[in-house]
Image (cartoon, rainbow, N blue to C red; front, side):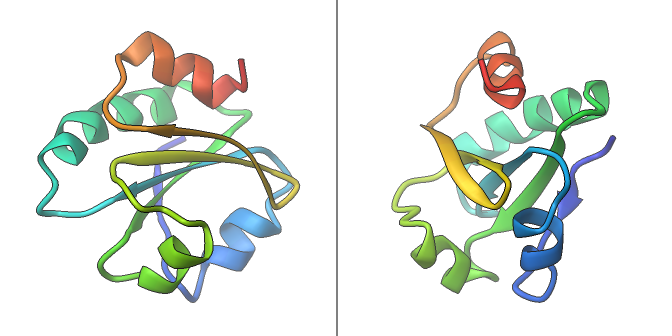
Length: 104
């Protein structure tokens, strides 16, 4: 399933109320490392069906980034039942993204 762009208006429904685990990719258009990680996250999103992958632009959705203390990007945050269960900051290779998304 392709990654979904999430905003302040859709965050609660897409992430907090999701019936399956969610991995949120916090990013910004000016962030070089984000541009490196983004295609990898997109690939993994297309390969998994039991986890929802969303993207959150921190410049356009700053209150979400502040609420979850996202101080450095790229930042992947895994949510299960609306609660953060894991976090990864910085660029990681595809095998690590796959493990992160699967909750390993």
